Length: 394
Ligand SMILES: *[C@@H]1O[C@H](CO)[C@@H](O)[C@H](O)[C@H]1NC(C)=O
Ligand SMILES: *[C@@H]1O[C@H](CO)[C@@H](O)[C@H](O)[C@H]1NC(C)=O
Ligand SMILES: *[C@@H]1O[C@H](CO)[C@@H](O)[C@H](O)[C@H]1NC(C)=O
Ligand SMILES: *[C@@H]1O[C@H](CO)[C@@H](O)[C@H](O)[C@H]1NC(C)=O
Ligand SMILES: CC(=O)N[C@H]1CO[C@H](CO)[C@@H](O)[C@@H]1O
Image (tube, rainbow, N blue to C red; front, side, top):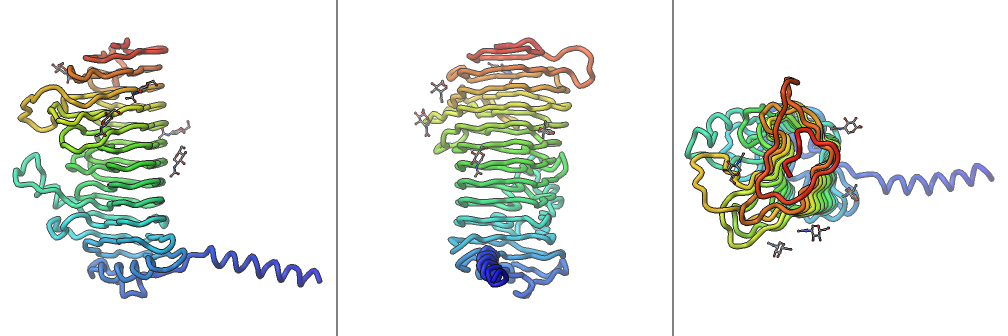
């Protein structure tokens, strides 16, 4: 009687368990070759097609091995939850111009899981950086992103490594409700434009437990980002965690509700930065409700910076004050060392002075330990709270 009861229970549990399982579409069954030479884009796209149309939970699985992969677009909508499980190493073609836009693109998918197996994306960028560096080559072109997400909703991007992207590593556009976690992002500090994670027009993105060392912004937060949470990110080398640049193009959207917490920035050119162009756009843009909290700076050139005359490449012909309004920005419990002369540089627009900027418990000292740093502010309204080293300029 008892045995029978347990048998029935097991039967129920087992059925429920089986339904929770993901049906696996292994790329090897679609003719993939892990010899590091053969282009696997055809095999991967066929596996994606079957995984995507599966009415339930499905996994497109890439086992261990090295796979050469040309440009691929994994497009939805899919019927269930689709898991792109990467254990292997994917290699991009060396020639950047063989890729039209991005190397690996996911678009229009709801309930997407990517990564999970500790696999690696190798963008093989070094040839592209040398031949297409805009600092030296006037004919430079935009280069492919390693992995991009367009219009993804409910995404979980995790346990994966991206090395040597040609341009950005991970880029999101028009996405909603995404978690990015347990990622490692690596490129040399002098590799041009290799942003770690970049987003625009995306809402509800959470980035946590990510380690980024790259040649451009660790995280770049562009036009139209809202409800962003960043925590436990280690950044450096790189250009820091940046909001912007903003105010260069018509049609940009406001940014709001951005919280960056519990991060360490090490050996980077900037810590936490907001940058806007000094050009007069017709539409006025607002960046507001921004919190930087519990950030450790370690030998950072510009630990806290707002620059409303952003212009990275000369000649910078000044075209009038920035039309971007920056409001309600708090810097709380920011401590550590800087290797420039200035700890806090808040240089706002004379036309739209920054409003309600708060400096709360700031302690920044020179990397060598000797002397002091200074702060500079222009066109800033706000207040400071708690101890301030160097003395607050607000
Ligand atoms: C992101 O984090 C916030 C705050 O911790 C949480 O409320 C929200 O549900 C998270 N979003 C996702 C997509 O998990
Ligand atoms: C940005 O916000 C301001 C103030 O809320 C609003 O007037 C403006 O239209 C918004 N701009 C855009 C591009 O949405
Ligand atoms: C800034 O915060 C104040 C007080 O919370 C609020 O009234 C105001 O609307 C906020 N400004 C923007 C641009 O969000
Ligand atoms: C700050 O702004 C002033 C103009 O208001 C400009 O002359 C100065 O060079 C700026 N400083 C920095 C560090 O950008
Ligand atoms: C990246 C970073 O600074 N993470 C820190 C978050 O807070 C915990 C607890 O204080 C630290 O151990 C982490 O190093």
